[in-house]
Image (cartoon, rainbow, N blue to C red):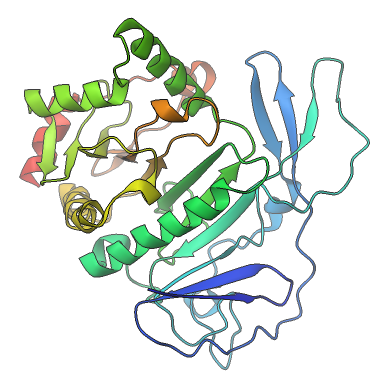
Length: 358
């Protein structure tokens, strides 16, 4: 893999990750405004959680026509975010970031006596998996998936070392039902300034299990139990298992986990990185085959935190869809949205059975 960093017209970083030698001398000649300053974090004292206030994201690009897609290679008639006329995998700083290091001094440190304010320090990047606008992750080759994994390892390692970063989160949103604003196959990477609520809850559970069992890892024990039971296992190979969690929140949800406990993507060895692609592509294609049409999904890498509690982490990928039937979606209505108490319409064992048969 050949790594070539450049700067876009507004100073943002872009990195080409090429599988073969390529000319990356094309310059970004657009006239762009400077990147926005870092967003604001506000602390909600009622639940002890942080919320990012990012007003500049309201103006981000929304479902443009294919000939004006900012993630396609540039053409003589349209200059996109990628100056070159073709690429393999490319990563660049988001033009509308939720978190960034462009901090503008703010004299306000409280909204009220109880609501603290901090700058949303961090980084947000876009990862384009292919130059083909009409493709999808499921259509990639195993070799390209391996490149993507190596890219995520590169970015995780670099972003984990940035000042103030608490956790690095790579993810992909796919489908208008999920809320994507760009159709081009792509993912994102967030470097969070605070440990997100779900990770914090998982750490608390992992720590209790660690203390209760004399040092055992919670996710390792859950994975071992699922592999031994087998009822919810969808597919597996020598290094990875894909299974439906016994207490799945989403109609169709699968975890892909390496058999060896590792903290994050950079810690995967070559054989594990090679083995991930074929299994993940198999699961994605099963998702699409369930109802005979592209499945909307969120694909989320859960990595260990950067600081305290890192030893409790266990890398895994959570893949889930809000589609519960061919013509029905699961909406996060009253119980889920207001109380965060999930109610799943699909029995996890039945979901696993359907995915195995797809």
